[in-house]
Length: 141
Image: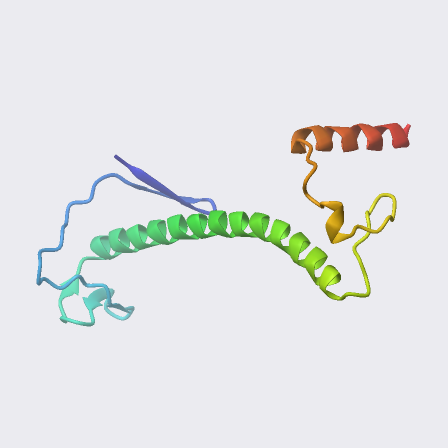
C-alpha cells in the first residue's frame, strides 16, 4: 500500500516500509543534519544514517502529524457544535437565575418563564430550517 503525502505542490509517494525497529534497538528519533558533510547522524547512539532513511522517517512522522491534526479538527468541530447548544442553555439559565429578568422570544419579544415549559414542544430541525429559508425567500421578493 502506497502512502501519498502532499505538501503544497510537492508530492511524496511512500511505497514500502522496509525497516522495523527490534526491541532494545535505537529508534533514531533524534537526528542531526550536518550540512558541511551532508551527514545524517542519530544523536542518541551516534550512528550515521542514510539520507533516504531520514527522509522516509520524516515522511512517516509528517503523515502521522497530519492525521492527528485532522482528527483534532474533527473533534474540535464536534465540540464547537455541542458547545453551541450548551451556550444557549447556559444563557437562558443565567437569565432565569437573575430573578429580575426572564429570557424573551427572539421573534415576538414575549417573556419566557420557567413554568412555560421551554423545550417541551419541539419541531424537526430540517423542517424549521426549510421554513426559515422559505420565509427569507418570501421577504426578498
